[in-house]
Image (cartoon, rainbow, N blue to C red; front, side, top):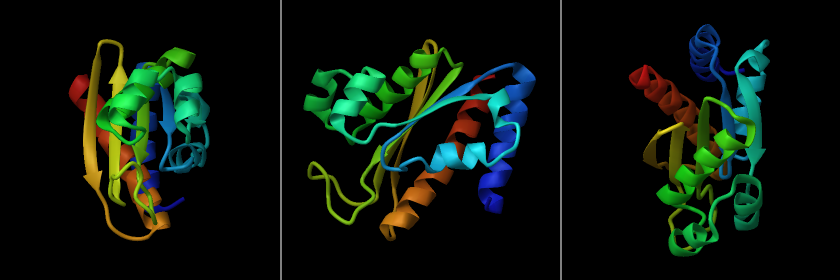
Length: 162
């Protein structure tokens, strides 16, 4: 595991394990990078509950409960969809926190949205927080960077919530 990923995942592990809390992840544009990085850490099962790759609009709706109205009005790549994904994955397995990513890794635009646009959302019962990224580079670079930034954002958010 890369040092940047390892450091942030170890910090997340300590915080969540010490607090008896759990995390579930819903990924679209990151394609499993977040779940893969988390599960590279031995003992991740102490805090990591579920990882879902919901790539299509239909998967976002069926697996995570993202409303068809949300998908129609805002698209699969939107702040609103990311928020619904993080809340949906959290509820699916009863995790303390949900973390979600949706965006455009490239090389083509999606729904008129530019390559490198990524939305991240973190949720817990009664609260959520989001961040918008505008990344550059190739598809692999965008996916990897979005995954790392999502994990950093999650750590930042949970520290502010406690």
